[in-house]
Image (cartoon, rainbow, N blue to C red; front, top):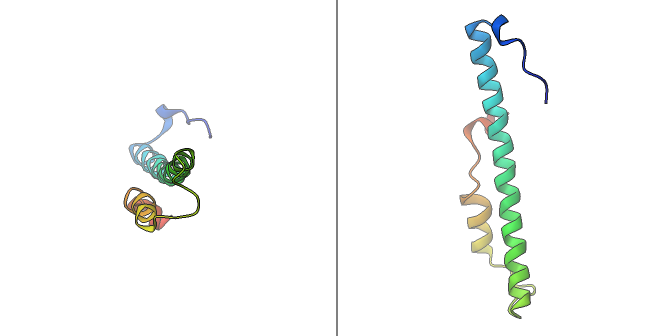
Amino acid sequence: MEPLPDLGTLSDEELKALIERLSAEEDRVSYRRRLLQGRIDILRAERTARLKGTGGGNVDVDRLTDILAARATPPAQAEDA
């Protein structure tokens, strides 16, 4: 991560552009985090099912779709990046 410039030297437009750039970066990082969290949720559910003796190979596609698609809708900016 690069250090912030001397904020006093930035014009209003430069400040606005910096805010927009960092906000877009935050959106991308947040989207990636949500995808990873979805995968972790799936792995934990499988582990729990195995410990209970009910898991092992059966993948619930509807659940995968819900976790990875519905809960992790990409931000609009991610499509432009």
